[in-house]
Image (cartoon, rainbow, N blue to C red):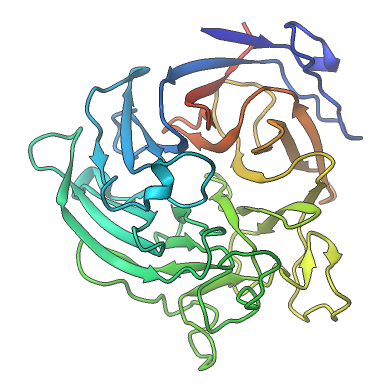
Length: 388
């Protein structure tokens, strides 16, 4: 099934009130189709690829399963099922921020068959674990291969973070929320001695513990956790590297008023402080002085326009002319998809590109070719395609 969405100059081609509001720049966003690839998933949270040339997609369900989509069809058996290890809230009624939250394949997966997962365990704490594909079937993981890499006690049930991604440097980046409740009552995000409210950067291989890269920004600070790469984050819900430039974009979920996108240019030495809980977006929260190392977001939007950001990707596919180099991100509650870009003098622009989509956007994803996908929490996987 395909839904045709016409957006050039706000042209409406279907019954839902979808339109484009272009920012003041010379970028004209293209028409696209939203192609349904598969449905019937239970609380899907993420989709990615293994980088092994198979062109398969791997979709994560919050309750603890990874499904393979091969040639636009879901296979009958999960690639991995760890539902018995995952917090039961992820399979219960109502909304939960716990569960199976992250998946990343080793850059050498085609040779070593290693991948990493992030989940909230039955005690409510974060676990990052390594798994191997089975020796006999590339469509099945070996559930007995699990090795726990790290764990983190979670003081509250929300803001678990959970995203995993390998950077262009080959290191694994691990996202943690501030530990939950409201307003970061324990001050975790600004406390460099704890992992909460941070992005970690670690070196992982096919076996054994992780090690700490020698050039991590706080390795020589006795008062800081050496794994920390960035801090001052509330709940980084999906961060990704531009596959062409290596720039890092972070979607950080806001508190009472503002959602934000943080940016780290390629080649950064790390150590950026993105401000929470002294700042929310570009706004001070309580009259405290701005930290000397504060890095303000490149983009923010208010809760009049959305409720919870889902960070996305810079489009690097070859199929949709006019999207090259555009960063796409969305809102979980409103279903809006924004487009953002930087002009020739370095200024950032953003616009609500696809509005009133009807989707509950839990994540975006890429395939090996750079095509972009939308994960609808209602159980559907959608691909952005060029308009017919």
